[in-house]
Amino acid sequence: MLMAFHQQIPDVAGLGLILDNLTPWLGLGIPLLLLLTIVLGGRATYVALLVPTVVWGVLFGSAALPSAPVDSQDPLVVASQNVHQDAVTSARSLAESGAEVITLQELGEGQIDLVTDALKRSHPYYYSVSTVGLWSSYPLSNPEPLDLGLGWDRALRADVDTESGPVRVYAVHAASARPTGHDERDTMLASLADYVAKDPSSKVIAAGDFNATSTDRHFAPVADQLDDVHYSAWGLAMTWPRTPFAMLGIDHVMVRGVTGTSLNRIPAGDSDHYALRASVDLAGG
Image 1 (cartoon, rainbow, N blue to C red):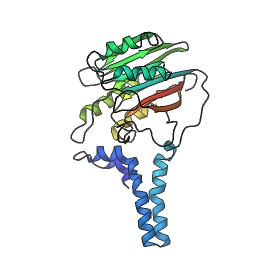
Image 2 (tube, rainbow, N blue to C red; image 1 turned 60 degrees about the vertical axis):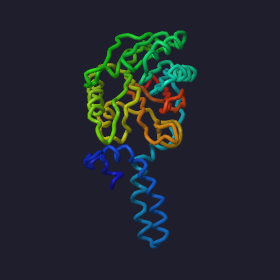
Image 3 (cartoon, helix red, strand yellow; image 1 turned 90 degrees about the horizontal axis):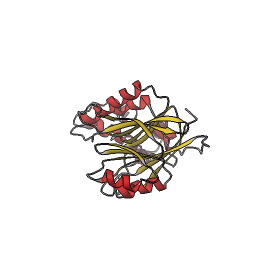
Image 4 (tube, one colour; image 1 turned 120 degrees about the vertical axis):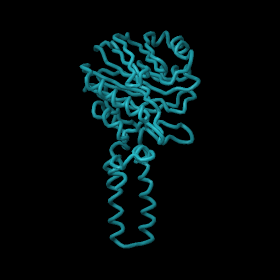
């Protein structure tokens, strides 16, 4: 019941937020139920065990399977990371991974200039707003800061002028979400969804730290407008924290009008977030 209807649980004292974002981990209860079933015995208990197993499979089974390799006719590689102190190492690692468009979030004082200098040969085109930056191998046009309802800029969008035409790229760093309060994050996600819904661009990519997993009820408006690029490995694309192990998939690369062909995690720099590297096919959508 918790897995299937977690978004209907009232968000009292942060309970809804916790349940929404930890829902995939409720599947760990299934092995415990199996042990209880073995102890109790009886055919009925084994049949009852099928219920949570099927529910988890329906909700997360397809997402946990690796995506099949796809040949891309017109590829574009996008990478994103919430960085820490060593933004330059992260930027270089993502550039070396073949990313043509790189967006970094939570850039500290002076780091934008350092990253721009480090990428000046491979990614000479850039645009930054506050602590969010976008670097590209292709020219950028129509850059625009986005405050997403906070009253100060914490996101941006720009057109990446590829050889196949412009692609609208959103670089996002949503506000933090804690059980004690997540109103600012919710406002930003709703505002982002509204921007994308009104965006006439035929090809859209949004990348960054959304501070929300795909099962978060407040992420739903964004998911209604954009599709997550499917993870290429087994399991779910958990990105935070890197140590001792990733528990939440709060970083995303999402698309509309193009086809996501692969998504991988990269342990770049000293950040507590894994970076994401996504390949999209501009010819598909």
